[in-house]
Length: 326
Image (cartoon, rainbow, N blue to C red; front, side, top):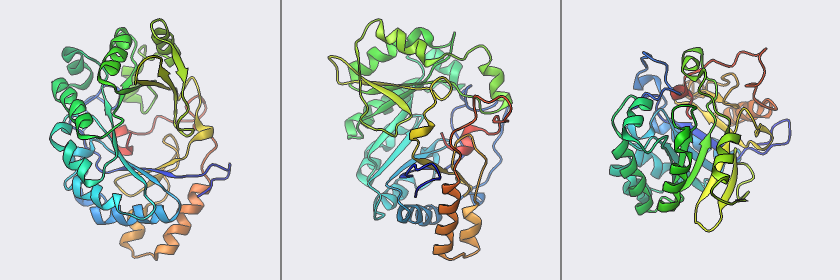
């Protein structure tokens, strides 16, 4: 698939569940309750069927997201089926890591290639403050088990927050180096008004984070993946890469090659764009496969040139991240 700006779309992020076992302050609004039911979500058969359709349209990489994907019943079997779809070269997953230790080896055996794990702090007390739960040790154990199982490279994702974890930037880098992991710092982006109450005063540009890392380490540019949203660097003298995802301060839309499939069956051609086709309805109405493919290709072609986070005249605070898939 090619969009109207000549970008080739090869990467599909699939949200497999819209529930989470953490309540991170940058993700889930305070007091928010998810009332969705499994019957409202795509079944495993429907997820596999749609992934096959996207593969026929040129998708080569799938990343499973949530919510927390490890809460999805039958996830290991789903990974196995997705990894066998012709044309799919990689199945990856983003997770909060809480349940990763018990599932890492089974997922690797099923065909999962790699994982990204959220880790915003090396302090168990601060972890509880950020996530609302006391699972820090479980997450760290999951990270180490994923590496041992061969789900490499294991990438850590850290949302930078002023006055919360900005004093841990170098400690997190040191941890990644010691464990031979990759690390990416992410700017806290707007999602909806309730989460933005927490964001007020806590936003920290990744330029600050990068400058902090450079005080101790020499960073060598590393553009192994030209489509990555992160500006990536090798840390000289180590096996670690550090990346900076800057959706606000350094727009990366020109190299974006991804679309998203929500677990409700709707697709989003841009994380911060409107929801598009309802593919679940098309499947359940028995629309012919070729007709579904044409609808997807047409919708993807019309993707916007860039997100509108930096435009005050466009309302973008319109979703809860667990519903969309991180």
